[in-house]
Image (cartoon, rainbow, N blue to C red; front, side, top):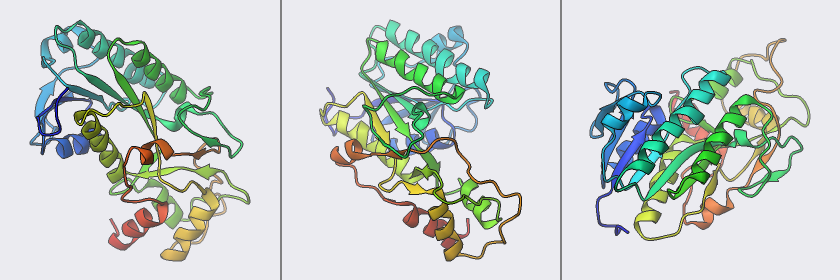
Length: 289
């Protein structure tokens, strides 16, 4: 086991917006490679690797050896069942197959998962032990990926992020400001996590591993206050100028209604930079970008 002062060899499989930020944060203390189908966008100081995760032959020829940590952080190319299956089932299976065959396989694999694996629609609290019976293709395919990792001989952890916002992830905020989101009375709960905390949690878990801490197979990564969508909309409208609500405004942006319990992440010692939606959206409103 590496000590906290030793440099890990880390692979980011999928180095898009979130993966690049995680990689840059880790590159201060570790040697980090970023693998993409087209490597040009991978930012320095991350080392660029180019291969399609769906092409196992090319993948085998490209993967570094003697890796300590692998973080699978892929986004689907298309947001349909075929796209999710390609990203979270086929690509992950190819990667794990190659890693499992290496003479010196990685010590730990992290799978960036999603709270889409939960189907609860009754405002109940969910945690890492709650039933996962998704009824939408996105959750079904992500859960297939989690289960593939759990069957691997490699040690692994799935990190289930809730709705990511912050920085240029302004979709919900802009819909509210444009009057396009108008939840009704007793609207569903929404669970949020700022992008900075996504990066912070992954850096924290890697550091925990480096310090010899035992990691759980799953972490639910969401901020500390689930909020009814109507309350979030009302709060934003009270903080900044918004257009009148359009007659055709949608009542809700997501299916289901659950409350995500982040106790396990907090118990590990992680302290949220944005513990609720208020801190995150206030900063976004003030910055205007």
